[in-house]
Amino acid sequence: MNTLTAEPEHIAISKSKGIKIDWKDKHQSEYQLAYLRDECPCATCTGAHGTEPHKSSYSAPSGPFPMYKPALKMLNVEPVGHYAIRIEWSDGHNTGIYSFDHLRKICPCAECRASRLD
Ligand SMILES: [Zn+2]
Ligand SMILES: [Zn+2]
Image 1 (cartoon, rainbow, N blue to C red):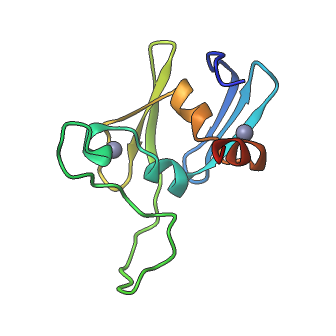
Image 2 (image 1 turned 180 degrees about the vertical axis):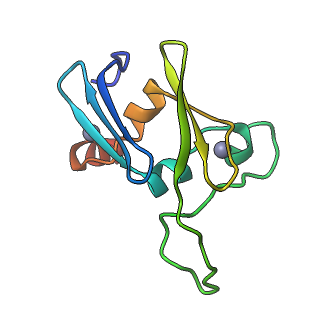
């Protein structure tokens, strides 16, 4: 199931709400902004180069030390080749390149969540 390359058929972008993708295999994914921001695959957020990860936590409930979080928005979304999109966030972060493979992998629907638990 997970060996196919993710290919979007249609992408609907709402800069204040999130992204919806209809995949070629008829699957549908809907990503909330906070979720997408938290799943940013860039080296800074994931600590890919041996550095400390600086993952955001927009979708997490306020912790023991609630901080004011300004409303998150996408300022710009641009295609990167035929395999990814780059998102510029209102918090100034803009190094996240979301490949379609990554997006498909983090699909938040119940079906995909369940299959990731295996
Ligand atoms: Zn990032
Ligand atoms: Zn899914």
